[in-house]
Length: 204
Image (cartoon, rainbow, N blue to C red):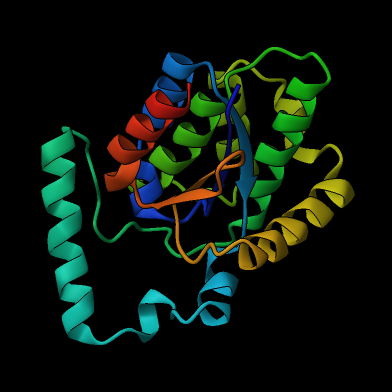
Protein backbone atom coordinates (compact mmCIF):
# COMPACT_ATOMS: atom_id res chain seq x y z
CA UNK A 1 0.00 0.00 0.00
CA UNK A 2 1.44 3.36 -1.02
CA UNK A 3 1.69 6.28 1.36
CA UNK A 4 1.24 9.84 0.14
CA UNK A 5 2.83 12.50 2.33
CA UNK A 6 0.70 15.55 1.69
CA UNK A 7 2.37 18.88 2.51
CA UNK A 8 0.18 21.95 2.22
CA UNK A 9 -0.63 25.38 3.61
CA UNK A 10 -4.16 26.27 4.65
CA UNK A 11 -3.76 29.70 3.03
CA UNK A 12 -3.01 28.30 -0.44
CA UNK A 13 -5.59 28.90 -3.20
CA UNK A 14 -4.00 26.13 -5.25
CA UNK A 15 -4.60 23.69 -2.41
CA UNK A 16 -8.23 24.82 -2.31
CA UNK A 17 -8.53 24.13 -6.04
CA UNK A 18 -7.30 20.58 -5.47
CA UNK A 19 -10.66 19.94 -3.81
CA UNK A 20 -10.90 16.33 -2.68
CA UNK A 21 -9.30 14.84 -5.78
CA UNK A 22 -6.32 13.57 -3.78
CA UNK A 23 -8.63 11.56 -1.56
CA UNK A 24 -10.42 10.13 -4.60
CA UNK A 25 -7.09 9.10 -6.14
CA UNK A 26 -5.86 7.54 -2.91
CA UNK A 27 -9.09 5.56 -2.52
CA UNK A 28 -8.83 4.30 -6.09
CA UNK A 29 -5.36 2.91 -5.47
CA UNK A 30 -5.72 1.86 -1.85
CA UNK A 31 -3.14 4.45 -0.79
CA UNK A 32 -2.96 6.18 2.58
CA UNK A 33 -2.58 9.92 3.04
CA UNK A 34 -0.51 11.56 5.76
CA UNK A 35 -1.76 15.15 6.16
CA UNK A 36 1.10 17.53 6.95
CA UNK A 37 0.00 21.17 7.14
CA UNK A 38 2.86 23.65 7.36
CA UNK A 39 3.68 27.35 7.42
CA UNK A 40 3.91 28.00 3.70
CA UNK A 41 5.07 31.61 4.17
CA UNK A 42 8.03 30.36 6.22
CA UNK A 43 8.75 27.67 3.61
CA UNK A 44 9.16 30.04 0.65
CA UNK A 45 12.36 31.88 1.63
CA UNK A 46 13.99 28.65 2.77
CA UNK A 47 13.50 27.02 -0.62
CA UNK A 48 14.24 29.82 -3.06
CA UNK A 49 10.77 31.35 -3.25
CA UNK A 50 9.07 34.44 -1.88
CA UNK A 51 5.71 35.31 -0.38
CA UNK A 52 3.06 36.58 -2.84
CA UNK A 53 3.27 40.12 -1.45
CA UNK A 54 6.95 40.26 -2.41
CA UNK A 55 6.60 38.96 -5.96
CA UNK A 56 6.88 41.09 -9.08
CA UNK A 57 3.55 42.55 -10.25
CA UNK A 58 3.76 40.65 -13.54
CA UNK A 59 3.95 37.35 -11.65
CA UNK A 60 1.00 38.29 -9.47
CA UNK A 61 -1.07 39.36 -12.48
CA UNK A 62 -0.42 36.02 -14.16
CA UNK A 63 -1.19 34.17 -10.92
CA UNK A 64 -4.59 35.89 -10.80
CA UNK A 65 -5.38 34.91 -14.39
CA UNK A 66 -4.35 31.30 -13.76
CA UNK A 67 -6.45 31.07 -10.61
CA UNK A 68 -9.50 32.35 -12.48
CA UNK A 69 -8.91 29.94 -15.36
CA UNK A 70 -8.55 26.94 -13.07
CA UNK A 71 -11.57 27.88 -10.99
CA UNK A 72 -13.72 28.02 -14.13
CA UNK A 73 -12.19 24.81 -15.47
CA UNK A 74 -12.91 22.97 -12.23
CA UNK A 75 -16.31 24.57 -11.67
CA UNK A 76 -15.30 25.89 -8.25
CA UNK A 77 -16.21 29.28 -6.76
CA UNK A 78 -13.18 31.40 -5.99
CA UNK A 79 -12.65 34.86 -4.54
CA UNK A 80 -9.37 36.22 -5.85
CA UNK A 81 -8.93 38.66 -2.97
CA UNK A 82 -10.55 37.12 0.10
CA UNK A 83 -11.56 39.52 2.84
CA UNK A 84 -9.58 37.56 5.45
CA UNK A 85 -6.40 36.72 3.56
CA UNK A 86 -3.71 36.48 4.63
CA UNK A 87 -4.54 35.44 8.16
CA UNK A 88 -2.91 33.27 10.81
CA UNK A 89 -2.74 29.72 9.39
CA UNK A 90 -1.66 28.09 12.66
CA UNK A 91 -5.07 27.54 14.34
CA UNK A 92 -6.57 25.75 11.32
CA UNK A 93 -3.38 23.73 10.86
CA UNK A 94 -3.39 22.70 14.52
CA UNK A 95 -6.99 21.52 14.18
CA UNK A 96 -6.07 19.39 11.16
CA UNK A 97 -3.14 17.88 13.06
CA UNK A 98 -5.39 17.16 16.04
CA UNK A 99 -8.01 15.56 13.78
CA UNK A 100 -5.39 13.34 12.12
CA UNK A 101 -4.20 12.22 15.54
CA UNK A 102 -7.79 11.46 16.53
CA UNK A 103 -8.28 9.35 13.39
CA UNK A 104 -5.08 7.44 14.16
CA UNK A 105 -6.56 6.74 17.58
CA UNK A 106 -9.73 5.29 16.10
CA UNK A 107 -12.00 8.33 15.86
CA UNK A 108 -14.30 8.77 12.88
CA UNK A 109 -14.15 11.77 10.61
CA UNK A 110 -13.17 12.65 7.05
CA UNK A 111 -9.79 14.37 6.77
CA UNK A 112 -10.30 15.32 3.14
CA UNK A 113 -13.60 17.01 3.89
CA UNK A 114 -12.03 18.85 6.83
CA UNK A 115 -9.10 20.24 4.86
CA UNK A 116 -11.32 21.29 1.98
CA UNK A 117 -13.88 22.88 4.31
CA UNK A 118 -11.19 25.06 5.85
CA UNK A 119 -9.78 26.10 2.48
CA UNK A 120 -13.26 26.69 1.05
CA UNK A 121 -14.08 28.93 4.01
CA UNK A 122 -11.17 31.18 3.05
CA UNK A 123 -11.33 31.12 -0.73
CA UNK A 124 -15.06 30.87 -1.44
CA UNK A 125 -16.96 31.91 1.68
CA UNK A 126 -15.11 35.04 2.87
CA UNK A 127 -14.47 33.61 6.35
CA UNK A 128 -11.46 34.00 8.61
CA UNK A 129 -9.96 30.55 9.09
CA UNK A 130 -8.09 31.76 12.17
CA UNK A 131 -11.41 32.14 14.00
CA UNK A 132 -12.45 29.40 16.39
CA UNK A 133 -16.05 29.31 15.14
CA UNK A 134 -14.97 28.77 11.52
CA UNK A 135 -12.60 25.96 12.48
CA UNK A 136 -15.22 24.30 14.67
CA UNK A 137 -17.78 24.43 11.86
CA UNK A 138 -15.31 22.72 9.50
CA UNK A 139 -14.65 20.01 12.10
CA UNK A 140 -18.37 19.37 12.50
CA UNK A 141 -18.89 19.27 8.72
CA UNK A 142 -16.20 16.59 8.49
CA UNK A 143 -17.68 14.52 11.31
CA UNK A 144 -15.17 15.44 14.03
CA UNK A 145 -15.59 16.61 17.59
CA UNK A 146 -15.44 20.42 17.38
CA UNK A 147 -13.53 20.35 20.66
CA UNK A 148 -10.48 19.26 18.68
CA UNK A 149 -10.06 22.94 17.82
CA UNK A 150 -8.55 23.51 21.26
CA UNK A 151 -7.20 20.10 22.27
CA UNK A 152 -3.53 19.11 22.22
CA UNK A 153 -2.38 22.50 20.97
CA UNK A 154 1.12 22.10 22.41
CA UNK A 155 1.62 18.79 20.59
CA UNK A 156 0.08 20.18 17.40
CA UNK A 157 2.42 23.16 17.53
CA UNK A 158 5.43 20.88 17.65
CA UNK A 159 4.12 18.79 14.76
CA UNK A 160 3.44 21.94 12.74
CA UNK A 161 7.06 23.04 13.16
CA UNK A 162 8.35 19.55 12.37
CA UNK A 163 6.28 19.47 9.18
CA UNK A 164 8.10 22.57 7.98
CA UNK A 165 11.53 21.12 8.75
CA UNK A 166 10.66 17.81 7.10
CA UNK A 167 9.31 19.63 4.06
CA UNK A 168 12.57 21.54 3.58
CA UNK A 169 14.59 18.35 4.02
CA UNK A 170 12.49 16.43 1.50
CA UNK A 171 12.48 18.97 -1.31
CA UNK A 172 9.08 20.57 -0.78
CA UNK A 173 8.85 24.19 -1.95
CA UNK A 174 5.17 24.95 -2.55
CA UNK A 175 1.59 23.96 -1.84
CA UNK A 176 0.02 21.55 -2.47
CA UNK A 177 2.92 19.10 -2.60
CA UNK A 178 2.57 15.32 -2.73
CA UNK A 179 5.34 12.79 -2.11
CA UNK A 180 4.90 9.05 -2.60
CA UNK A 181 6.94 7.68 0.28
CA UNK A 182 7.91 4.39 -1.32
CA UNK A 183 9.37 5.91 -4.48
CA UNK A 184 10.19 9.49 -3.40
CA UNK A 185 8.31 10.73 -6.47
CA UNK A 186 7.26 14.33 -5.90
CA UNK A 187 4.33 16.18 -7.40
CA UNK A 188 3.89 19.93 -6.95
CA UNK A 189 0.53 21.54 -7.58
CA UNK A 190 -3.08 20.52 -8.01
CA UNK A 191 -2.43 20.38 -11.76
CA UNK A 192 -0.10 17.40 -11.18
CA UNK A 193 -2.69 15.18 -9.57
CA UNK A 194 -3.21 13.30 -12.84
CA UNK A 195 0.48 12.41 -12.84
CA UNK A 196 0.22 11.23 -9.23
CA UNK A 197 -2.74 9.08 -10.25
CA UNK A 198 -0.75 7.50 -13.10
CA UNK A 199 2.25 6.91 -10.87
CA UNK A 200 0.17 5.10 -8.27
CA UNK A 201 -1.40 2.98 -11.02
CA UNK A 202 2.09 1.90 -12.04
CA UNK A 203 3.35 0.93 -8.60
CA UNK A 204 0.14 -0.83 -7.52
